[in-house]
Image (cartoon, rainbow, N blue to C red):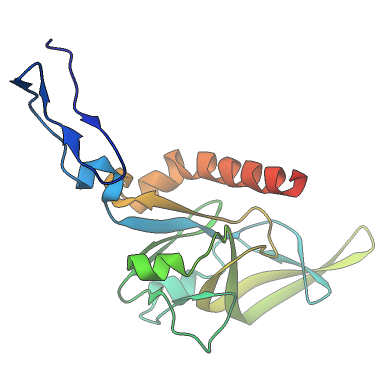
Length: 203
């Protein structure tokens, strides 16, 4: 009987702790059973991706938000760029932001009540003020390259201007450093979100 593992039963009913009147050791706590707190994380912006914004073709240059990230300026996390409702967090407290070779990545540690406000949103968008823009003509189109910008918020949304952005919720037990997870987990997360969106379009 040495291979026995604790088995959960029922919705909130507890665990089997004895088999044949013998106690099973190492009964998991509720935290390890999937009730730990969650974080929201993903890519808020993808660099070098042409996208339409207000009828114009735009591209974010790599590192365009570097000055904001290096400063003490607070960046807030909203839903749908709706400033009439309180943010879910900010970079001075709950929100972690890093610049990567792919884009602007984030991790939000906030309350379960705040995470419920996301309501299935899997896209992201950024709020910023342009500081330096270069317009180039590519195949007859004027393309605006945003070289420097002041970032003041990121928002969860159902569909961002850059479709490759993503947001996913994950147990706090399963996260490491944000920079490491960006490298090893975020590519799979992005593919998973893209698959979910494709399936939703088919339904």
